[in-house]
Image 1 (cartoon, rainbow, N blue to C red):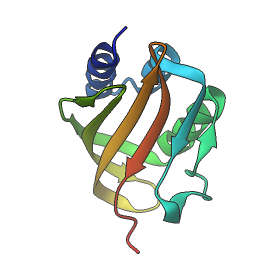
Image 2: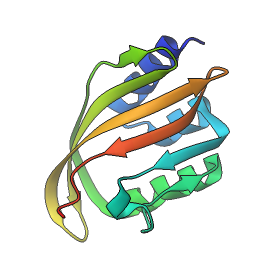
Image 3: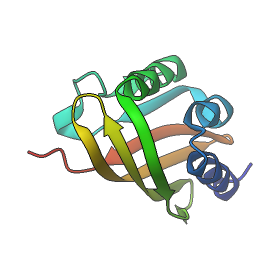
Image 4: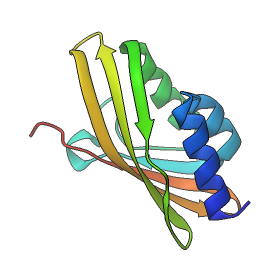
Length: 124
């Protein structure tokens, strides 16, 4: 699967809220997930390994009371890298309803996502 094919598959799955399914299908077992520096050491911080990425997703989902909408841009591809803009309209248990927008950057090797890195404002 080319980087473009992986990117298009991830976008399609994310647009349907199939995050965990996408991780199982498209991520390498030793993939890493990187958050902005201010978030790196928190409960939603940096992790390594598919199991840790899945657990991080479960922690995020546990804080969501309702997903009102999600938008994912078409991917922008450069070699083995691609990026998308993701915007989610969610109601969080702790924060109420908010719109979260981030740039998501991914690296693909051997047909699998080996790295995801997120860029967003952390309020600091």
